[in-house]
Length: 275
Length: 275
Image 1: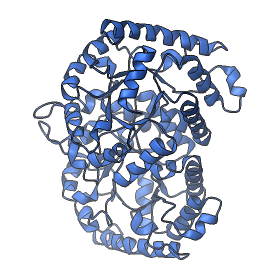
Image 2: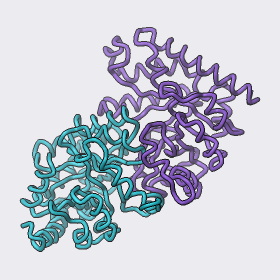
Image 3: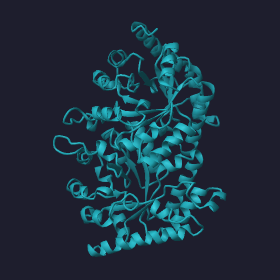
Image 4: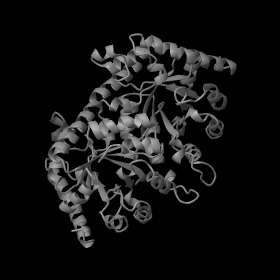
């Protein structure tokens, strides 16, 4: 998928919502636990109930690996279900991988080719040759951790260098990498004021923004400083949507939560004359 | 396993060799491809042929994820085989994970508890709360990326800060984290001269050293600057050992390569009066 397709989908759905599929068997409705694949059944119901309100789904691989082979089967079925039934959806493997070149190639093939995700999140610490293998896939996207939404973001990411801060340098350096046009960035919403700094460095890239809602970020602030001429934002919500309810009515309640966010997004898109 | 047990094993085996199980179906002997689980059969043969010469085995998860569910089954069988048959071995999940706190907890449980590895490699970019969930497991070890062996290491890890370089700061900061005594560090052998700097910051920790052999690092140089009073080094070799031969004789040839390294290590241990 191209970023142009993604922007078109955002305008059509009046939403730039990404739903995080971080599935925990302790939190999903009990009745699903009797099905053959509770994680997949949960995801399927959430996706079916929200696909017209979200442009992207993002399973975090940790939640699947936690269940071993069973979890990988659920992940595989989930991405296949998305690709088959909702091919317009921008899919994100939130895997935060990164290793030496030939090893990163393995991760890239696994997630972008075999599982056929549209994108994967990647950690920058190992530098250029750890990221470029992901960038080599045409019409696939590498979402590089820039400034994350957790407290530990301030341990290293904001360290002052001679000219700027480490995450600035990560952003700037990444622009020189081969196929850099396939880059997007993770930028935490808990620091909305950082967005204007970031937009000076990467004015055109899409930013994946976790931390709105449960983690305390403000959607309107993020949009004020982070939106660009192609919208350029994917706002993720996980727990606030998928665990809105733990009864047989969970998918409908998830939809209601997604509607609330979509309507706020629609207002912002209207205000900014995108629709 | 405690680091004391690890040092005792090193002295008993006269070796601080870690063998990287980075299994590629294109590189293993053809006859194994007809078995039910070629990756596991390959690993089993390598382990059986070398377990008295190595103190540690390190499967890199990328090579297993590349084969999807089949790969995860092979990984699970490999760690089970090691834990059942050679419980003295220090096992490393080379996974380079790291995410926000509750997500890192999932990875930690998956690798340290369910798969029961002794340790896991972790990326530092997301800071304290992304690493501490791994450190919470008693007698398990978190091997933090400090200075890696690839070219991209110079993109960010060696960036100058006000007082020092980024990887220095990662090392120093990590020492303040809860259960920091469970930390080890990845330090690339292609930069042996860095080891004396690193030993000033983390004199007592074990260092996992990739990059000796195929990647060009010198064992004697690494030991000269990196060894401490508990030996404190695990030297990894992957391709040079496991792909020494692609015939039915592969395990014996792998053993011969491991013997060469073990003998060099024995000389170093003798020279330094550990044995």
